[in-house]
Image 1 (cartoon, rainbow, N blue to C red):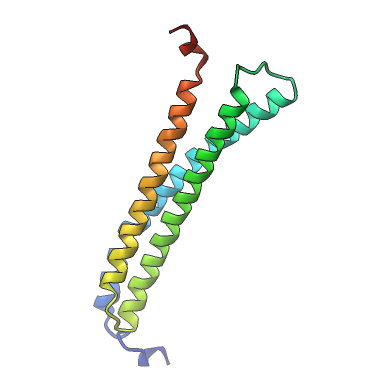
Image 2 (tube, one colour):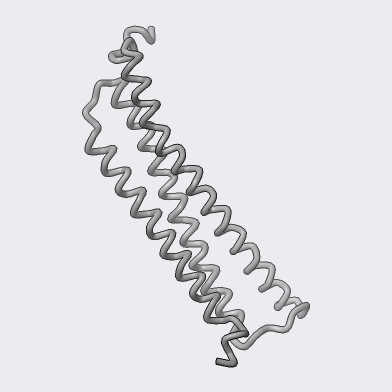
Length: 144
């Protein structure tokens, strides 16, 4: 039954698509590393906020507001990473669907890659903004 599908007999085409799908797969592992970094930063913010709220730590002036702003940035960055990963997964699926069904999906693949890279760029900019917020609130900077 599967042998009757168009394109399935052409093993070379499928091998080529697998080779092309490896690059997005490596990119996915990098995105998930970034998600891990962001999740760890968010967890540290949550721990700090809980310690301040419970009276276990002395808050710096305006610290809770900074923590909330930083947490929002980290949360948005995680969302952008997830979107980038989702788009890359869709790109891999469309690559295989295009070969198996003999569809011209080149423009779709290009659009998915561009959209994924844009989402990743947004995530990196949000991470940079979150780090900037953290840096500006360092107690060490108060003496300057």
